[in-house]
Length: 100
Image (cartoon, rainbow, N blue to C red; front, side, top):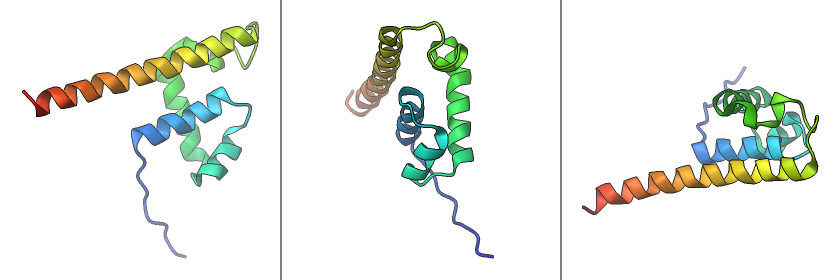
């Protein structure tokens, strides 16, 4: 049996894949199939994200339990803005090192 070559994914790719699962109505299996990633791999990325980001994900109370659509929308926007902010901090640090 042929062994598949190990593939490596950037953190940005992983973050976007996780965002597709958490922000959308599609299950992990559908997103994994669209991205050509094994569903177990994507599931582990989602699990790691939920562990590191704690209760601010939908998994804390289940999808939509006790939350309005507006609250869910604001949480998605907040998560996206936090990720963008973290990226910009890394970029600023990179350019600060490169150009003293």
